[in-house]
Length: 279
Ligand SMILES: [Zn+2]
Ligand SMILES: [Zn+2]
Image 1 (cartoon, protein in one colour):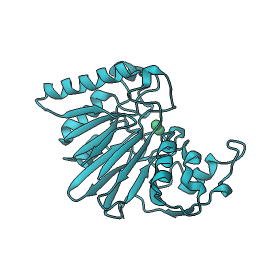
Image 2 (cartoon, protein in one colour):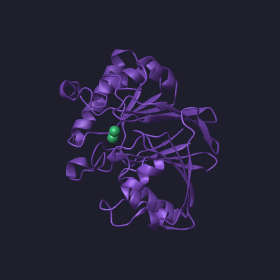
Image 3 (cartoon, protein in one colour):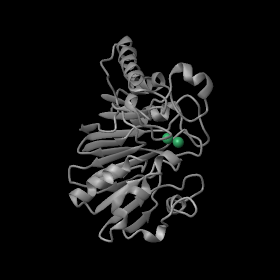
């Protein structure tokens, strides 16, 4: 499985020389299975570049999963070029978020007066499947969802193939249980022994004094989960819009220090919008 990140920023796209390393685009991941199945997770602003790559590679069949329908995770959808090509076929999977189906969420993004082109301009064949928490297969990938602890809820995902496992939990507040969210023990069990965990690590302890209940974790909370779950690699994700590269670097270094204090050689890294991971 190859995991490529196209956007690692939280909340709003940013630009400027202080963001060059981790990037300014919001959440978008691409997962390619060994058999060549292609899954897009979230359509934040990063999906624009991914869409252009798919056009270049002439990839016309893929799956889109959403973690939730907060703006920073859906705003790139109208800029995903393959949706305007009648040769494209896209499968969607998703639980209803905040009482809205995936179909409704997508229609809303392109609804007047928010956007000049409406849903009718989409030429791709869109298929909506709604298996929810029971898990499902996408080609050779086994996909297991878990409910996030986040305002308006959302889903995290585990992808497994040929004995390798990757977990993606963004917008997940580990030390405050939002309605419908899981316990710390459940998240620990879900991530147990996976090869790579990418987790929301937006805040510092200092931020958290005023951001508790906003739906995001601190990096020490996320590293605590990574250590308890004995994951091999841990990626910090959903970088705050006001966090320049040097400060994310400092958080990554501190994660390694926190792990070493526990006698762990956990590989901590900050996910950038060009990170590629092979497992
Ligand atoms: Zn977000
Ligand atoms: Zn969110």
